[in-house]
Amino acid sequence: MSEHLARAVAPQPADAAAALAQPEQLPGATLFARPQAARQLYKLDLKLGFRCNNKCVFCVQGDKRDHVRDLTTEQAFARLDHGRQTCDALLLTGGEITVRSDVPEIIAYARKIGFAQVQIQTNGRRLAYLNYCKALIDAGATEFNPSLHGHVPALHDGLVGAKGAFDQCVRGITNLVALQQTVLTQTVITRQNVTYLPQIARLLVKLKVAQVQFAFVHGLGTAALTWNDTVPRYAQVARFLPVALDIVREAGTSVICEAVPFCFLHGREWAAIEPRLHPTTVYDGNLEIGDYDRYRHEAGKLHGPQCARCTWANVCEGPWREYPERFGWDEFAARSDPLPRDMAGSA
Image (cartoon, rainbow, N blue to C red; front, side, top):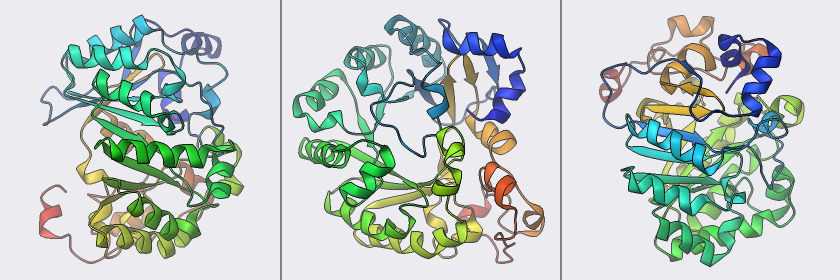
């Protein structure tokens, strides 16, 4: 959740801190309420807490780690019950959810009450233990979303602040693939790894994952504190990301990118995930973001002066707003080419 969203709630600072520190049984405030006429599949993004066994330099949630309490098992169940009224799919995330002992229990409960899909977002370290992978699968997990941010230990471990994390994550991915699970990886694009995106792509293809996602770093939380070392310029991303996208696609593996505006994706527009995202409701602390699409469009991201004359503006969300607030709009350029027919219908 961004500072812009937090300001929309506008409680007194002490009250806000107390609310976050002691999560209620159900979220206490709803922002960006979802429309009454829901589209195809709604996903619930449930943040179980913000404890973590890594200390990533790019963590968008890093500022919550020390002052926001994790949900109890009972609170997690209550939020699942509430979310299931409108959502069919579930993403369990944090923080790092695998530091909890009750994750199999939470997964099993979610499946029991009717969630058809349960995706586990994780740094992948605990997946290095085969029996733990089997426990999550037996409980009902249907997809796994581990994060790999480097092609060698020095790069990945440096970014996540944990020695040995690379080897554990790679072993975890290998375990899941051997167990014939759906593995959808995430790589956060940072200043430290942007030039190595092609090498990371080759490694992920070699590991035989089902899908690779490259996501531009969101400059909030810890990333706001490490901005100068962590946030790359889009002009640099545009040199290396297309190569990485092509490597994965040519290998026959699904590949997507997030938070990369279309003016930096000439010829690779097919990779942008935003036009294809499932509608999502987010439970974050004591807040419910009913329609995360609206949040991204109205509070999370921005259009600049060039966007007003861009032919792709209606399908492009623009960058996370913190980027132009720091760097300005000089890198961005309006496009004049027409939208492809298959995208024009969603504009």
